[in-house]
Length: 77
Image (cartoon, rainbow, N blue to C red; front, side, top):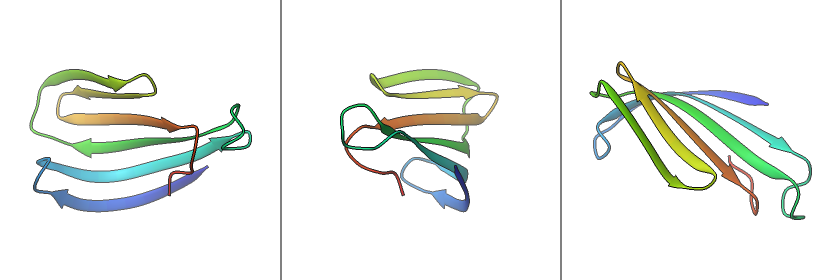
């Protein structure tokens, strides 16, 4: 597990990215293992939910956004 401080404003998405946590489970690329990422950001929204694909979702509550993403073919850096 790896935790990284991002600390920058993204003008295009209008969010302030704060922290990213990445981890791997098993061996990535063999069909069973995966690499996952969970990030925390501040955004100007009260509540929201969006599922872009099966292993990816975004949840916003009271201005805090959680973004989860999973990759079976490569590692998240």
